[in-house]
Length: 95
Image (cartoon, rainbow, N blue to C red; front, top):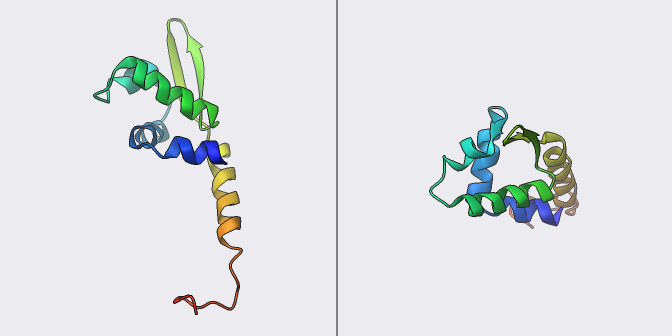
């Protein structure tokens, strides 16, 4: 779970995920959307892949990235379970 939150901590990586919600895209297409170098984008892709949030498929000279919703869903559910462990007797003010 830590690797997912680490991956989500950077705004470019969150924007990449937003773009991939629309469908798969090439690494070049994603990189062109940001004012950073290709090696920097490669680092962002690596971090997202390591967290399991995206997967890449080589197609000729390109890599096509897709969103891996099952991992994101699993992490969010786990996070919600942790957050939901508060004492039931607390009201909205925490009293």
